Amino acid sequence: MGKLFFYVALALVLVSGVLFAPEHAGLAIHPMDQFGVESLFGGDHIAWYTPTNVTLWMLLAVVAIIAVLVLGSSNRGIVPSRAQSVAELAYGFIYKMVEDVTGKDAVKFFPYIMTLFMFIVTANFLGLIPMSFTTTSHFAVTAVLAVLVFVTVTITGFVLHGAKFLGLFWVSSAPLALRPILAIIELISYFVRPVSHCIRLAGNVMAGHAVLKVFAGFAGALGAGAFLPIFAITAVYALEVLVAFIQAYVFTILTCVYLKDALHPSH
Amino acid sequence: MASTTHDAGHGAADAAHGAVDAAAHGSSGMPQLDFSTYGNQIFWLLVTLVVIYLILSRVALPRIAAILNERQGTITNDLAAAEDLKAKAVEAENAYNKALADARAEAQRIAAETRAEIQAEVDEAIAKADEEISAKAADSEKAIAEIRAGALESVKIVASDTASALVAALGGKDDADAVASAVAKRTEG
Amino acid sequence: MEGDLAYIGAGLAGMGTGIAALGVGNVAANFLAGALRNPSAAASQTATLFIGIAFAEALGIFSFLVALLLMFAV
Image 1 (cartoon, one colour):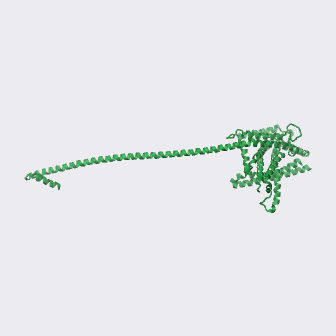
Image 2: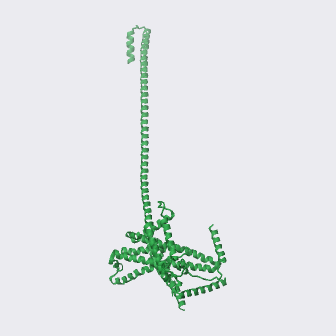
Image 3: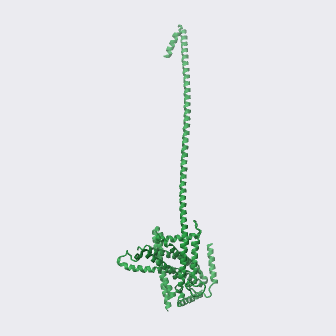
């Protein structure tokens, strides 16, 4: 049965490749076009309030989050429905992460971290829908997320520990002569954190989507031979599903790690 | 096929030209670096984040926490109830075992009692039988003794008769008293 | 001419992505080796594994970004 299905799918790909082959077969690959920000209702000028595809897909992310976390849990079942168990899994996953990585006293940051995780993971998965727009592939978006984390960590650190928070950079376990050098390195790494935090997420998502687009371009150019790139697209897509989750996870757990520095700065 | 490859090569060259053109025009190459859209993205991102935060912290998270707590409570209660029932089951089993042991002991007691009763009856019967037997034996002995006594008497009479007859035959004087004493003397000796 | 040089630079920068892949593989391989030696401690260290992979991978993404910048922005 599976084999038959496979051959039927292969035949469909080959036939459609012959039928819909472009008039002038060629590599017309524009991998970055999918990231373009466009106004939803026409017009070239994009002001800060213009509803764009960014607005649309962020709205869809909010709708998806409401659907899973709010509507899914509305039955309050002791025996959960599917949506409710997804909501409970997400809750338990992030709650345990905050507790384990940052500590029990970090629970007051839990809604904030949950917001970050849910937004990133939903935006990543929505971006995997063909023809969609991936909000997390833009540095503007991830940079705001990363800077928010950076500011939160820094302010929390100074509010809770005052000047002692600077002890984070003064590695007291190192020999005295090395400490100033280490302090400079620590300081630099502290300020590089938001940069790598933001570029890691946007870069991963962007790279995956660009690779998919490049293979799609191959498929368009090869006509009947398109089944090879299509298999590649399938494989890369599976990888991207994994990456979509792992990058959200990594972003969240790094947030927890940075917050731990602010709450318990003993180096 | 060869011509296709050739075309593809041309296409690649065209694409490369296009990219160079795009690069020459600046921002259109990489939308991520088009700073004119940054304000828009940041504004909508902040709106989205605030909305998600409010939804999560006001509605979703407390509700899910309540559900999880409630389930935890239910599970704890159910576990306690199960523990209770288990204890009851163990108790019932103990009672059953005790009843069984009691019944067995009772049965043994009854059996022993019955056996003892039967034994007593048997003993009584045996004693009675023995008594009867010994009575009968005594009777028999008495009868035998009587018979024997009778026989001795008869022997005395026969002996004295015979002795008198002998005395008479020998021409002696029939002295009954002397014969009787002589016979008695002889038979006793 | 300058555009062509930018493409060469982009290709060179793209190699950095592969080198970062070596780093990620190194992290994963050592984690696996340690996990097989002491499987009971492995589960508690998956978070550390992902943090390590993320740091190694971030540098590869940096070089990918440099390649993109050279191709599209220079």
